[in-house]
Amino acid sequence: MRILLFSLIFLALIALPLACGQTENLQGHALYDEHCANCHMEGGEGLRQLIPPLAGADFLRDNPAAVVRGIRKGMAGPLVVNSITYNQPMPGNKELSEFQIVNIVNYINQAWGNDYGRISVEEARTWLQE
Image (cartoon, rainbow, N blue to C red; front, side, top):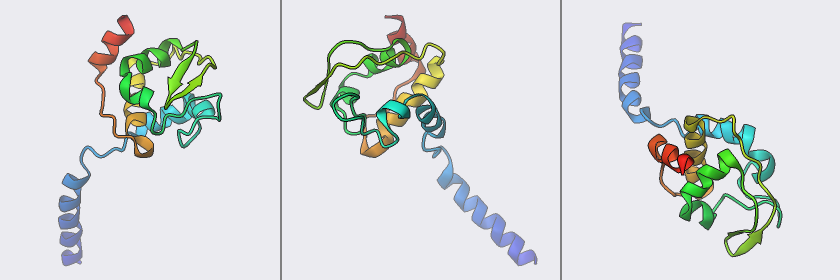
């Protein structure tokens, strides 16, 4: 019994450092599912020629400030993503906090094979004030 207990403690001590910081953007994923997936779809593929994709999207990669502002304030007018023009307005989510927006952006920047880095709350705050 004692050996089993020591073995479990030993395994926990080894596994704990490996898991530290690896939340896989759980809050961002949940917020995305609640506020974004209805249009951009669960896999970030968008909806035909109406809603732009987020998976592999050059606009997402190249325009983090516009993405942050778009989540809060919405977007209207033509938008080119991966050489395709989209012209469906996107409503804003004024109720989302800066922290929630950062979590969403950091999730979509790492989801579906994207590797677009992370943004900070300070960056988002600055972009939202512009």
